[in-house]
Length: 531
Image (tube, rainbow, N blue to C red; front, top):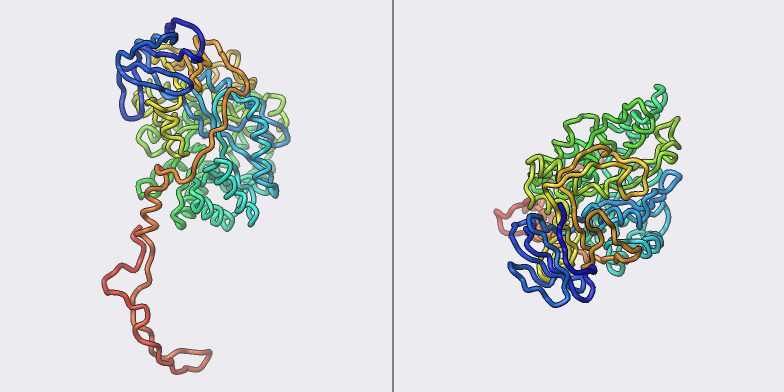
């Protein structure tokens, strides 16, 4: 089925009127028209008049959704001796074909180098290539006073409000606990959200040595050396450190039941923590690591790994549907077979990364909505709105409302498609969802008020997307933090000074008289933190 249209163009001077669809936001669905002009949503309501020169898209029987926001991509990332093949052009072109209209990519400076210089480098790669809007997280891969200073500049002058810390990749990106603590403190002070790749890097190194000593050199060794307990332990540790500071924490790419349970438990205890499962962990599992074909097995290698328990994707989807997990990304970081083959004799040399930016929306619809685990409104929340709120893009992004950016997807919930590397728009030669039939298909994608994908055909131009700066202190993240800082601080116990004897070595000395009445406060006031 196709959305029928009349008129021409993609939202230039005349605008676009989307007629007769069901507008779906996180809080409600309604039959309404949507009028777009000059890159913005100008009106939403029933039976809107057709402005002169406007193109009309008939969306009767279809859903009109906010464009997807992929919270986690790595376009053209230099990593493990090579570079991801999906650059900012191919990656964002694929994104819009799947209904995603914004990506949040990661700037990852090498240890000991400037965060600001890395940011400038990544932006120079992205600006001339992006086909949709984008923004950046920045990784903190080492710690000293210069890093702390540059974080402040990135927040105040570059529009960055999220920083990622690695607990894995020892001697490459990994921070120790005593570095995570000040990094989290700085994030809280600046109003940025602290993100964490949660795996125990020390245990991974030892586990990899053990596997190789046992003669296990293939892709299965990747999962065996970093089992889900390693992910769960680091997740618990990151949440514990953040809680000691009253700092909000965001766990990227949640891959296992164990780690997801840690997050769910923390949220039910009232911790301000957000969990991000990805298309891969929601749509497939790690049994392919034991595939007899090395290329197939290597195609699934990513960190943290997919889990061999086939019940994992459904379990994570249940938690996502019920708000134990909050938002979805892809960790899109793609390498062709010849690049994966760098590790043909040693799994630790296989470049980590999989696809997902094109297929995320369809996979989540198939495994979530079509299977009856979540409704269309929760789908919008976990693919767009929650991301916009966490990263302070809302209501510019993540909602179909008057004044919001015209990033819109016309979605056919009854249509289906079969995912394949032969037909996808990404540059990579492999697809981890190969052969999956997905119900729920984007018919039209509108980015910045322009039709960029329609009826299977892309209408994109490199550089059409823009960098979107983000302000700090997103209310969705920090409201509870502010209140707890005001009312939940520990206080000293009120007691009379000790006036008895003191011991000094082997002798007992008389305690001089202390000034009585020091630190007196009214009795009955609590001495400890309230949370």
